[in-house]
Image 1 (tube, rainbow, N blue to C red):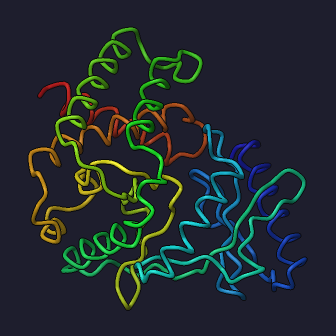
Image 2: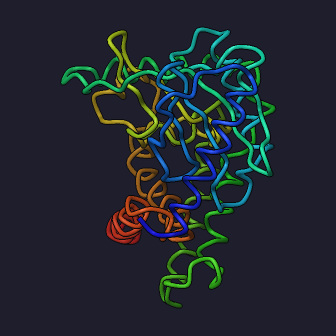
Length: 284
């Protein structure tokens, strides 16, 4: 573990412990369980986690956590399959010495059942439906993709990119925008329903992490799913789903390449998605 990573984790732990004690929570055996984007701290005695804003990416501070909390509360009220925020007075957002954090219910992640893909599709469909009444208040997916494209054009943000890479990224961005225009319709999206944002429980899958929730073509979320999960969406554009899988890699490559020293898994994701995007989108 590098020195900066250790300092970041200690700050997250300290902030979580101090805030938890202030709201009368048990901090016994509090520990970091994830640090790939923001830092997640488990309070096992309370069956809660804190989400601590430690990301270096734009727009990931207090406003983002507060917005995510409101979405989580809305989703829980509407019966979506999500891990909900903690109760009133506990959830936050809280501040401790410049660090922002929120509290969420914790569920142990069990092994994914071998025949559960259809169930995952239904869970995502329910997530979309639960946000249907606020879709017009959600940020645009196109803006998110635009920001990813900007990162790939900024030498200070992605210093490992060559001029050839940046020209290719500009072409890919135009192609993604054209595809969005051709799809037209917009729905409420999770934004990043990948395996890391799904918890498998005895009762089925729960979605977590709503910072990327936005409005855009349905096929964007479907691009994250295994094929067997797509049966829940009979009106999907299958060709668009296939193309957007490469567009997803375009965005993930941008975000991970912009913070490659964040964690080993971030660096690995940068390499994987950059290669996947180059092989699939540019070869099309």
